[in-house]
Image (cartoon, rainbow, N blue to C red; front, side, top):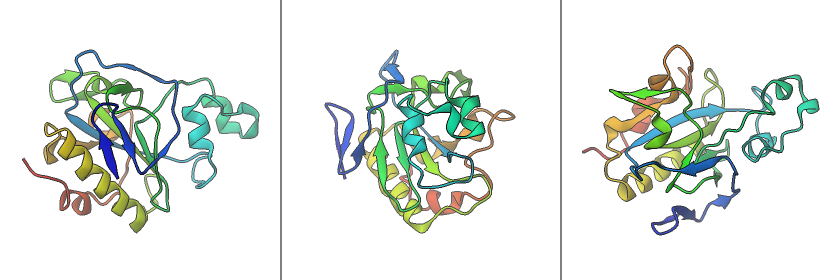
Length: 183
C-alpha cells in the first residue's frame, strides 16, 4: 500500500469514489477518527456501506435504509471484516464522517481529520484481519501526515460523546496504540 501525496489516494486499495466530500478549509490533516458501520445493522459483507457512501442505497430494501437513505455521508476509508480496504475520498479532501464534533478546543473535526470506518458493531469483536489492515493504514497515514500523533488517533465517541458510541467497547485500543507511531 502506498499513498500518493499529490492526489491523496492510496494505491493498493480499492477505490470507490463518493460524491460526499468537499475541500478542506485549511488543508490541515492532524486527526484520525475510528468509526464502525454495518448495513443493515449487524450484517457484514453486504456492499451496502459502499452504496450508502455513494448515495445509491435503496430505501425500500430494509426498514433501516428508509431512515438513512437520504443522508449524505462518507469516510475516507472502510476496512471490511476480511481486511479489505476501500477508499472513498482523497485524504486531501474533507469527508463527511464526524458530524457535530469537537477535539480538544476545536469544533468541526471533518475540517482536519481522516475517517476510517471498520465494518462492525460496538459489541462484536473486530477481526484480526481488520486490525492488521487498520494498523498498516494508520502507520501509512501517520508517516504521510506527521501531525497525526498517537494521541491524535481517537474514536468517534471521543469527538462526539453522548451522540456517538463507535467504535465501541469491543474495539481493542491497546492493540492499536501499541502499533501507532508515537510523537
